[in-house]
Amino acid sequence: MTIKLYNTDGRSVQEFIPINPNEVGIYTCGPTVYNFAHIGNLRTFVFEDILKKVLEANGFAVKHVMNITDVGHLVSDGDDGEDKMEAGARREGKTVWEIAQGYTDAFMLDLQHLNIAQPGIWCKATEHIQEQIDMVKAMEVKGVTYQLEDGIYCDTSKIKDYGRIANLDIEGMQAGARVEMIAGKRNFTDFALWKFSPKNEQRLMEWDSPWGVGFPGWHIECSAMSMKYLGEQFDIHCGGIDHVSIHHTNEIAQSEVVTGKKWVNYWLHSEFLVLDKGKMSKSGGGFITVQTLIDKGYNPLAYRYFLLNAHYRTQLTFTFEALDGAAQGYKKLKARTQALLSIEAEETVRTQEAINKFLNFCNNDLNMPRALASLWDVLKNPEITDGEKHTVVKFCDKILALNLLQEAEVLTLDQQVEDLILKRKEARENKNWQEADKIRDQLSSMGIILVDTADGVTWSKA
Image 1 (spheres, rainbow, N blue to C red):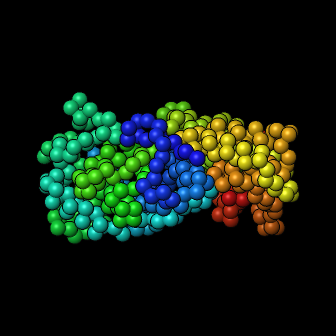
Image 2 (cartoon, helix red, strand yellow):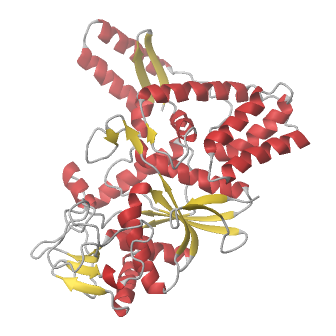
Image 3 (cartoon, helix red, strand yellow):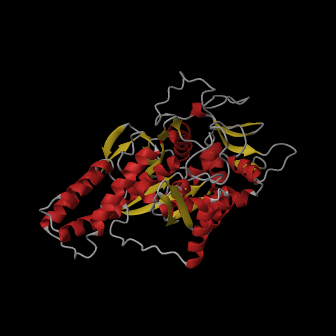
């Protein structure tokens, strides 16, 4: 089957033709592990998971690489401000290494909750410092770098087609919108490749380099690590739409100046998840995590189902009312598919036609709303046997990853937990809110999530 994908580099839907006939190389920008990932961040990772599963369903072996940014990502989109990792360490009174490991573990748990398959290769920025130094040296040889008091910079005016993926109007742009004009920069689009440690101050994370003690810039890590594991040219690079104008623009510039050839053939980006009052962000505070959803009694896969009902390139507004609707839809879908568990699967011409229809929608730039609707059509069709439906659901769920044919877990409570729930109920009735909250936290630490409703308390296992 033909796969068509929207390529940001060219702004068009294009037929996907891999470099190697049977294998696809994908690099996806991973998290900066200074804080929890919010559900807006995770929309991107769900989209990338769908892409990977669609490619595999089409018979490709997927070599998937994802980075962990644990150094070099500054708090601004320019090259000023504090490293996010050091800011996180100061905020929580921990070492940067503790911060990195803690939030990496939390991110891995988020992937598990959302049935997102892990990449074949994880690569941490701090474990690839030499590769990043080598790439800066290669750029130095190409004559596109210069040194300022605070670091080594890339001179973007010397790079042909700089900003093409973002359609940047360099002459019409002004500094100050997203990128600050650091003193001495030749062009405000120039970016740091290596930053020096402040004078008379030891950073929490720093390394020796040919130019002095310091740390790599954010953009250089993705170029250096992707080339190490995928080669100088590979098929697909993904990320959020906010990466296009700066991060991915700079990745392309430095990579192609080093190799002298096109770096990535297809660039795919997911749109924002927005709240009623605007884009979700960590800097604004109050962002929603997967654990927030769990604490409110939602199955994380209801959120995945919510995302599947919108195309990855459309901006999606999140409200709890909308999530409630998705949760009900997911519950109904599960009820229909659970009824097929005891039915023996049956493969027929009709099942292959249904599977092909579903996959065609997936192959059309990951049109998951239409693909999901086609599955519903199969389940509602009285002319299709339950055995045939079982076969179709089994295939579709390889991509949807909604555990549609996984037997529902029978949840039971041990006596200790039951006693604590009863004790908390009594504390609430006596308006002893402090004691009730204390018991709630104790139950949460035991993996039991309580949700207070008008009809009483309900519980679930995290």
